[in-house]
Image 1 (cartoon, one colour):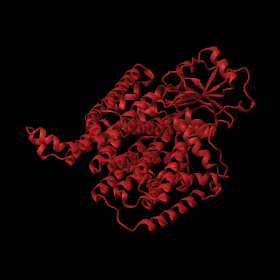
Image 2: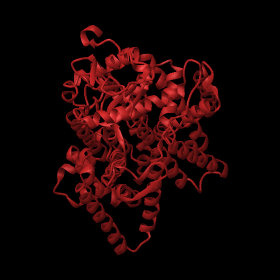
Image 3: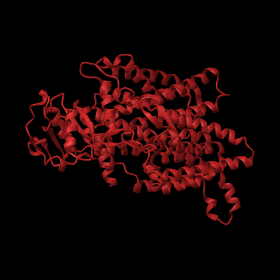
Image 4: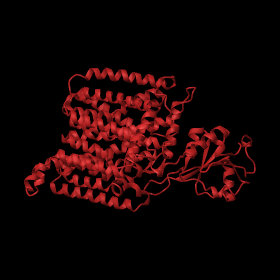
Length: 621
């Protein structure tokens, strides 16, 4: 299996090396801009590895701003508009780099090398998913594809804004610019940009841990936790959560800048401090456009930090009571969450399948709270507030009754406070070793141990656990498109009239504590029919009984012309359609996919009277 991962990743690298190199260049340009700006503001107050981790986390800020200019400024209409914008970024990046390159930064060359190698290996390994993904996974990805397609416009240069009320636009802008400038297919650009973003997410936790603890091994340990400790957040690619994943690196970038703003508010000059906060505010705005719920995360962390600061000023007894009250609150939240079926998967990454790593974090959190009480307690409070946000109702205009955060987003983001607790805990354990050696003289094995050795050992345990638990390939749960589906969609694009109305199977989306439906979503490859063919699609629950006259009457009322039965996912029951040739005529017959024409209505639209010739899989191929 592991040999297959290497060979699959290598095959993707060979097949798409131009696109991969181009996206890496875009990341590098954004990183160089952030690196230069941070060095102009903070100078040598950060080590080289801290500069690197923070600039990797922030690469998407200048690229997103440039992408916004590309769109809002009308540059999108130019044939080489995206290339022009990236060329200007390149010039600006090199100008700033030349201005700030003098003066070496303090730091560890070994640590910087480890971070660089980890980033490269992570990118390479995550390409394995691309080798098995026929198309980006889940129904969300079809919507993302359509938005990017609309942003890019047609051959005449016309474009359209995303659907009304859609506000997670950051990922789409960046991917649109990458696809346009590199002349890449949108599907390949989505898959590879998504994997590149996943590779940058873990590095963003290094800065806070390293700067707070002054321990390189603790920072590296936190990075390994975020990368391979649990199968989240990487698993969210299976749900098509590209905007949410893109917001993770920006959110951590915002939190890191806020941390530095607090650390150096009395040290930096007024001009540099203003520049730092302008960058912080810009990153916050871009993060909000990338995914609006990232602002909720930022607000939760801010509230937790303020509360932890207040908590530190309390008398010792009240501190202890408040601390144990929060722990009790977390246990009550966990118990309540477990009673709701809709929240069932929430703890799968962190307990059901991640109990080994989470148990290590629980042990290390004792040392984290002892050595770094404010930051550790902030992480615990963040966990408490994240779980509690699942039950706080909010009403959003145009979206109905929601909660502060939904289950998938909380499941994705929980890795962050846990990784921070792990890094702080290792640093705390490192500090406590001299005292432990003095008190536990009978444990002679402690005499030769150091925090670095323990850190290396724990990182090794993460990697060993990842070899057995971590899956780099797409999950079967979320693949709704098969190869037969792509053949069928291509056939429909060539044979069905442009004004065809196609029925596709739908299922209800339930991710809130109320267990109420958040609407209908496509259950099979029908989600991709409209984005790829521009034919109109109509939802009907996949459980619908096509043998009933009432169902046929409903199809006639909705003016449905065709029915699509997909290869995988939740789809219609063919056994209820085939026995009624007077109502449904088979047009495309494949082993796993069928397309029917609705002929049982009293009167068909004149434009669709002529039906395509019936095709079998053998005739198509």
